[in-house]
Every structure is written in C-alpha cells, then in structure tokens.
Image (cartoon, rainbow, N blue to C red; front, side, top):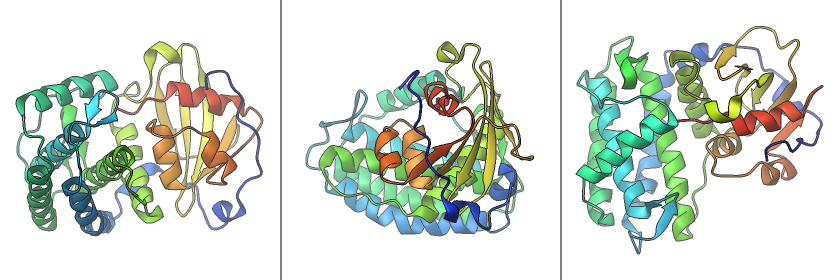
Length: 298
C-alpha cells in the first residue's frame, strides 16, 4: 500500500451527526467504561472459550509464525498480566513497541509449553473469572501496567477486550470459523484502550521508525457510534489532538471493527472501503495511505 493513494469517498452522514471532538482520555476515563468493558468481556469470553476448545489442530498456522496453539497460549498470558495489573501485582518487564512486545511474548511462549486447546480453553475461562472478580473490586484511579505506564483500570479491561477480539479473529480465520465482532465491543477496544495507550506511551511507540522518515500528517478519525480524534504524525512520533479538526490532511470515517482490523494489519483497506465500512476524504488523501504504512501498533 505504500505510496498508493486512498480513493476519495463522501463522508458518512451517520458518522457526522451527533459526534463531538473529544479527547481520547475522556472516552477511556468515563466512570462506566470499566463496567462496560467487563460486560463486553462476559459476552465475548464464552464464545472465545468455545472457539479455542473446538480447534482441530493446535499446530496449524494462524498469524505470522504463530500456530493456533501459540495464539491461545498468548491470550492466556494477556489475561494473566492484565489481571495482575488490576490486582496491583508485578507485570512482565517489557518495552511496548512491536519489537519489545515480540520479545516478551516469545519469552512467555517459550516458558509455557501448553498447547492443548482444551486445556487452554479451561485456563482462559478460569483467568477470565479471576479478572472479572478483580475488576469488580477495583477502586484504584490508575494501576501500573507494562513499561511502568499508569492506566485507569478501564483501559486495562479494554486492552484485554481488544486482545480477545483480535486473537479470536486470528483463531477463527485459521480454522474457518465465524468470529463476528460487535460494533460496541470494537468501539470500547479502540476508544477505551488503543487511544489511551497512544496518549500514555512515548510518542514513538505506535510508529514504525524505519518507515516513518520525514512523514508528517494530521488525520481526523471519526469512529461510527463514537467520537472524533486527530492523529498527528511528526517524523516518527504520534500524538493525539482533541482540538478542532482544522488544517487536517485527510479524514476517515470508520466502523470500529473494520478500523481495528486494518490498523492491526489483519485486513487490507480496500475491502472495507468498497464495502462502506471505511470512507476517506480530504485535501491530501494520500497522507492516509502513508499513515497506514507508518502506524505500527505494538
């Protein structure tokens, strides 16, 4: 996609009505976001457990070099350290960049030899119950997460939800099973986890430094059913701007689930564009295409 312009499309009228320019932390820090995320996890986890338990071959390739068994084991590790974060226990030492997370994930997978789908399904179910119990008792304003970042408990819960949605998609795709992602769940994952993490982590964390070069751009992101945020790229850094969307290079109106899969590299942009899940327009639409080569979620 590098260097390929994004075709212009008309703004989605539904995405523009009733939406306000709000800072990402305002979404993630809402008092009821933690409860919403926990309710979403209670919706998603039973289907996830059933999906993992039904895996016919744990050694089949899923995403990258990971097998389906690797993905399921990794999910259990995320449940463990997100629960530990909410409980005030120590979490793995990690640098939250694509390279840093790849290293810590590889280490955890090497130390955990379990790949039996039934065993991992039971493990995930048990850990999910523990997470729900810990989250229901959480009264902390912020907790320590990876790389010493302080996050509201809601952001930790939304991060866990995002991991369930993405890796459920990975397992379902590899095994030929359906994995529908509800808009509300994806919206919680993006606004409740991804945006707060961009705001909390160093500005280089979500950017591919090798590909960023001198790229500079301002892209307004309108999440259907949610708010608006301007992503500001500046020569290897990324920050959020909750101010007025003047002087932006391009706009994107997006179904949250489609955007999540595109940003994380699980889906190309053309299918959701042609299917109306994404719409792009603006004075410099090629900046959006460039952004997709530069952004690199850990």
